[in-house]
Length: 427
Ligand code: KE4
Image (tube, rainbow, N blue to C red; front, side):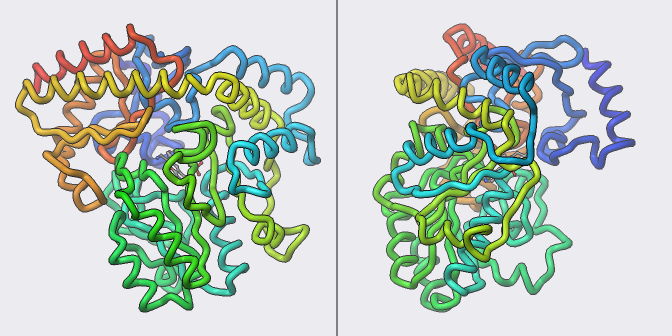
């Protein structure tokens, strides 16, 4: 029963474009009206009609500790009692910057803002200012937020809605963004051969999460480092999803790559609005008020977001074995679900890295946007609707990641598998 949700959506559609404040929530790719949520606890989330689900969206990644973790709620409440925002520096942002730099050996300085989009927008502006160049290279299917320069053949909601690119981005700007296939080092070499001296930066999700989960093939990221270094371009890791998701710090496979700038978000805000860009001092010192590159935000480093982020990272730092627990949960769940699909004779490819995964409805392999797009999105939509009706909340798009949190337990796994089995019986 979803009466209240449907009534809310009808009202929302009159007031908010598409009835949602972020397109990928609109269920456009899976059919039906979006479900309005009301509360969450641990791995569970409850909609406005009282239906409970095991949640694998987890706010699109931030809630690695699960919903309403007591330490996070307490930290936010305590800070709220003292004040929500001062428009002045606070000790919290210094503490969080210190923790991030401790966790990311390649970072020497960090600037906070209120979204991953702002983090990437700032990184691109910094790279263009630092190199004096204009061109940016990105990868098809990677999504880096909705700033103008990065909406070319993006992933996430852009891929979900099948939008070619976004109107409103001037051609003169769009042509400065070169988009090439992920996991194609030959394409990167060709772009540098043609445009090398004009390329300010290459930006990449070290593990793609926005075309669904797609892992970098061996040598791909190091090749990006070689080519950017050889041509005086910067390498930007967009770790908005992967930052603190896979390990304490950044993507473990990126250790030896040493990107010039790293974009963060999601987990470092513990579920409150946050973004951050970090990097080498020489680059970061270009930022105002120290340098000439302007970047600002009324609520940048907001005390509530800092408090929630500090509470979250403190728990992750104190119990790094939690990453092993989430990895085990996701491994076991994916193995079992793969078995259910195999017994059904339904070809799927499950791409997983630690606690993030995607079930692609295609025989695979899935190694870039083109192979991801071979997925049967209609079949995914039926699977999605079945899982929701059986009490599991997957991401409402074939081109997104499922996220496991520290709160997901054996009972959640059992119920998820039961839901999967029951759903497959109806397909
Ligand atoms: P935000 O501006 O949404 O905080 O972050 C943008 C962003 C940047 N980089 C990466 C790798 C990202 O995944 C994102 C945002 N992720 C999407 C879901 N994959 C956010 C969900 C939404 O748009 O509602």
